[in-house]
Image 1 (cartoon, rainbow, N blue to C red):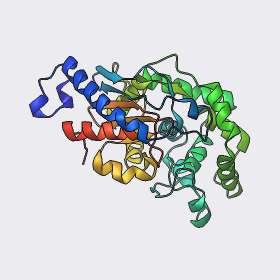
Image 2: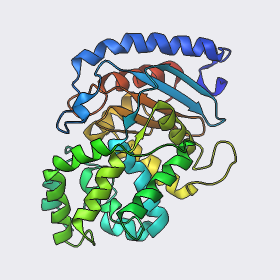
Image 3: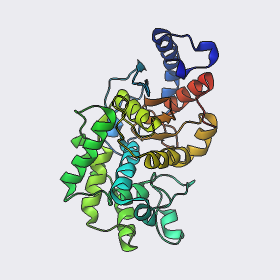
Length: 321
């Protein structure tokens, strides 16, 4: 495990590391009361705002966990990284980036402003809702069911968890409160960004956002990305190297909503958050991180989870910069 640490702590064993993590969890859990669980999707509002957990998975497959790591959590926007990788594998870079840009935005993740004001009228990047909906439209498959099964199979392979599926109640709750996402999708349909039936594309989008996993699943996916897309045990390429690099780059520039720049400075790890309070992070060549902390800050990121990652990064020199 000494890949984790500064020289002064390189001799720590896993029990000592876990003890340090538990202390960090206790410290930062106090911040949960200053955040707010997302309730604009009613099913998300049922989450326990006091939960905080962290899983670390090294590229050698070693796992250390602390805190509330066993509770399932829906991926929400974390799924955008996975669907981007799959769409790039399906369609190639040229077609994907004809439809979606590569630039960060300072606007909220669900904003329609840039779609209306830039030319051409395409989403700035794949990590905002408009971009992720456009990415979803590029997933190959005969129908929603086949496309969803391909996404699920991909996530099961990345996480090593064959039982992963989606939360039907969450998907339904998202569908019932998705008027802004519908507006984004129909605007893009009007301007030729997306093709196909808008309702089918949105159905797939809601369902892949509702895919459920735990901290360990997030950490293992992060470790595969950190390992340049290769399976941790077999060395098999699950995500081609150039696509893994693209995904990690977007995680740095756009992965933490409109707090991505601040996160890059304070933490410095490629990461993607979701409004369920999950964070998936990938420290290149070393490890993946999975965080659960449903209480969010004003920009939609786990308030205690971000603080936890910041302390870990400072203590163990995780920043890639």
